[in-house]
Length: 273
Image 1 (cartoon, one colour):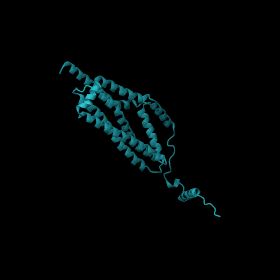
Image 2: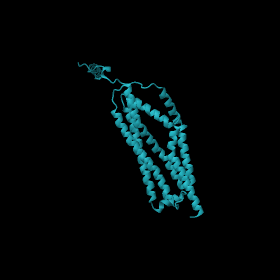
Image 3: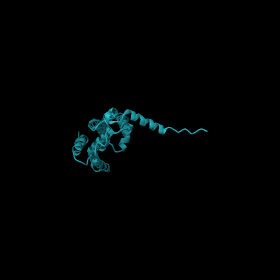
Image 4: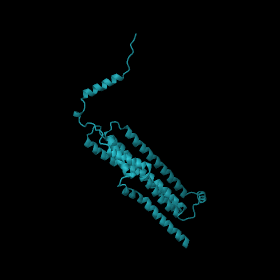
């Protein structure tokens, strides 16, 4: 191995170490910083908890079902996209020389012995994101079962217990979905390694900077920060339904109310000549 090749290999190893520090250390860094106010990750946790609090005491849960359905569809879409990308890059690893000719035209050194490792790193990032999406999908299905099992009539103490239980299910589900989406940032960073070690270093640090900015200083983070403040000022629970029958109307009165309401909505007969 020549001195030039040895120096290039050292640069590649250093760039790879920086990439793994950024990729695997970002989540721990955000969790550490989110202990203070103003981080999107922490504010979202508070907002989700408030959602579960309202869902538990809400009479009609169609709105909550639609939100969970939207989450399931989004996770399914991204999981499918990850599979397609993994298959495409895997195909490039075993393709003919034609693919590498096009890559050479983009400035990629296809003669490098690290080319397979570079493409494998992209697949690794996408595969981790795929596992996040699959786990998020499973947990969202757990949410569906949990939402359907919540009893209709609850008092304040019971509502608080169901709120905590539901939050413990939905919060990791949404967090795994966010981690899967975050994997695209680092997949692009891993792809930059094809253009050299310095491109990998710049892309890795750039991904961390961009994600950190969106966590703390984006308009969405400011809006969620304000939403969290409003929710913390709002008195909870807003309302709970009576748990015991003695707190409800007698059955005869309820049936009479339904009968009167049905009669008021029946079409009136026209008088016949």
